[in-house]
Length: 281
Ligand SMILES: Nc1ncnc2c1ncn2[C@@H]1O[C@H](COP(=O)(O)OP(=O)(O)O)[C@@H](O)[C@H]1O
Ligand SMILES: [Mg+2]
Image 1 (cartoon, rainbow, N blue to C red):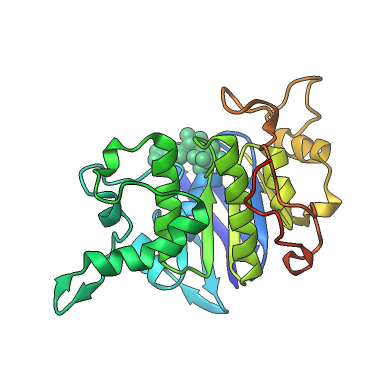
Image 2 (cartoon, protein in one colour):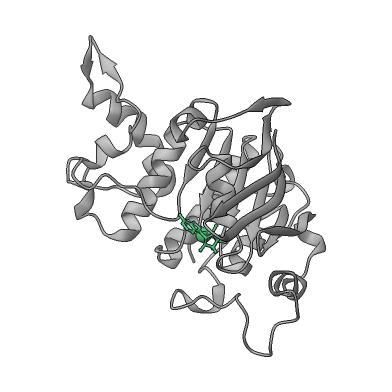
């Protein structure tokens, strides 16, 4: 569905991406992993129009695309939830959900229509925020979920989640895993970045590893890759005993969400059972 190739990006003297490519297919959850600074966020910002590359190309359904910004990418079906949250703190929760223009009725912004559109997505994510509160008043976890909700309301075909569970408690993270799964079943391509390796590999169908701005493992079948070999690919060497980037720095320890969808690492999302997704034990 989306093919990026040869992407190059420098920041001053730093080579963030050095000829990176990735392929995203409909119906997959594609994990993107790598150590801090490997270039993951830069890659997904380029794919979603937030950052412009110095070289390389992106194709959507075989057609070359060049996004002038995130809004244009969203209009073509590519939505991102950035690692750095982009909540508009002074706007209401509801207004935050429609950053590219609220639905209108007879020329006027329709709060009712906003509520109607948002309700099923909020329900799917399992949140019930005060819609007229200022978004800045919400706890961090709720803001993170709000941004995921915002991306889903764009009805993307390609959804990019950059560390979406970093601020989430276990139950919400597990629920998001279920949501991610169902989105893939509906035919979306989901690109999922997480430093919770076990968490992301439980829901991924494929995995790409970046190291120092290069792809060191391109789109391998998740079922064919052990956690050990992933860590080795990320580091360029086997992890020191008892250490390794799989451990969450100061986050949820153990990398395990409380509950995860069953059918770990099934070869295709269609073969997974949605039963139990999004529940917590
Ligand atoms: N806006 C920026 N300005 C300067 N350097 C940046 C910027 N964004 C990323 N970098 C640098 O580019 C490299 C890749 O960063 P990033 O894509 O954020 O990696 P990751 O998401 O894998 O941690 C790092 O060395 C980082 O410091
Ligand atoms: Mg990052």
